[in-house]
Amino acid sequence: MRSPPRSARVAWVVGTLVLALLAWQGHHVAHWLPRLEREIDALGSSGPLALVAAILLCSPLLVPDSIFGIAAGASYGLAAGTLYYFAGMYLVCLGVQLVSRRWLRARVLRLLEARPRLRAAVLAAPQGGARFTFLVRLVPVNQALLSYALGAAVVPLRYALLANVAMLTHMFPTVYFGAAAAHLTRMAGSGHREWETEGALFLLGLVACVLLTLQVTRRAWAAIDAEERRVASGRSAPRSA
Image 1 (cartoon, rainbow, N blue to C red):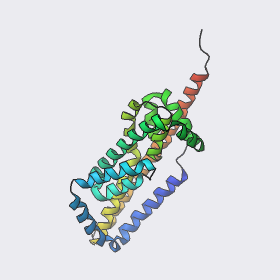
Image 2: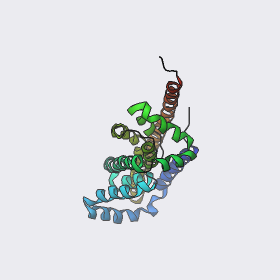
Image 3: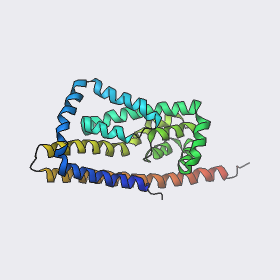
Image 4: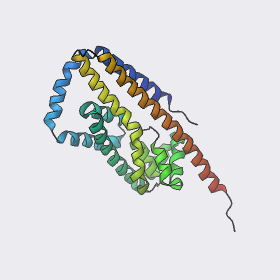
């Protein structure tokens, strides 16, 4: 069974420490929040559209998608932020997969030689069906990069229509982080009397999200490994006369 990259685990530990620091010393930056909130409110309905547009423009260039998740959570809260972030990334992934399949296939496959695990997984996806594509989407890598890879592997776009929903498992924690950071900063700035309790609850919530994501990732890799072996054995089995 493959474990999540060490860098991912380190990133979430650092993120948890950042939230703890904001709960403790967030009053030093809290005075920036009202201005930011006024600017977001002034955008009105164009604010979410601007966020989605930024995702559409930047994600195909492999800008880390977690940046948009944190920004969405800090600006629009957990529910709305998740919705806007997911909508933008869903459209990006469909578009990138289509472009990669039609025009960038050879180039992307060459680039994937530097990432043999990802290459092996996506090359098995067309034979694995929609379920296998769903499992691949559970792996927390850059989603635009994964879409390039799936397109180069000629995975049918119809598989992605449902499989892309699996992105939510690792998108939600980043939105949660942004929403929690904004809330803890605001709470520390207002001198909230029960910041310790609420801060601890937010931190526990983040830890729960991270642990759940890591568990899903481990199980996804195990299922991918099993599916790769099944596909490989199917290819090597002799055909009956």
